[in-house]
Image: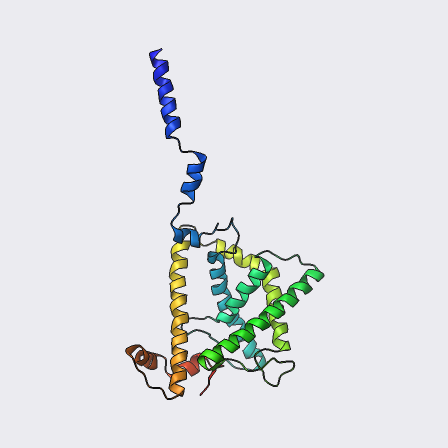
Length: 258
C-alpha cells in the first residue's frame, strides 16, 4: 500500500509539473520579437512577411539591374551604368516593383490560363506605370533628379511614364508572378534556418545605410548644383567621397537639375 501511495504521488507530481498545451503554445510565441519579425513561418507560413519581401526586394533589385543593362546594350549599344544606389549592383525600382507584384499576387503562382494571364498583365502594367510615375515625381520633387524623361513619346504622362514602358512593366510583372516568383521563393527557403535571421538583419542594415547614403549624396549634389557650400563635416565627406564626377559615372542615365 505504501509503494502504491508513493507511486500515485509521483504521478500526480509529474502531472502537476507537466506544462499545459496553453503554456507550450504561449512559450512557443515568446520568441524574441526580432526572430518573430524575421521568421520564415511568420503569418502562418505566408511569404508575405518581412523576411520574404526583403529578399524579394534585394534579389529583384539585382536581376532588374542585369535586365536593364542588357536591354540598354541591345537597343542603344554599349555599356552604361544603370545602378540605383551608391553601393552594389542594385536598382531599387525593380525591387519595389517585384514586391508590389508579389503583394498583388498574394505570393501565389497564378494559374497559367489566357484569361488569368491577361488579367495579371493589365494589373502589372498599371501598377508598374504608377510606380514609375511616383518614383520619378518623388526624385525630381525632393532631390532635383531626373532619372528618365519620356517627353515626346507616345501616350506619355508628364514624361514620367508612357504606354511602351507600361507594356514592359506588364510583361515583366507577368513573367515574375507566373514563372520567376515560385523559383525565387524556393531559393529564399534554402537560406539555412539557423543563419537566416542574422544574415537578414545584417543585409537589412547594409541596404538601409546604402539607401540613406544615396539619398544624402544625391541631395548634396543638388545643393552643389545650386551653389550651396558644405556646412558640416558630413557634407564635406559627401563632397569628397561622392563628387559630381563620381555620381555621373555611377548614375549615367540620371540628370541632377541645376
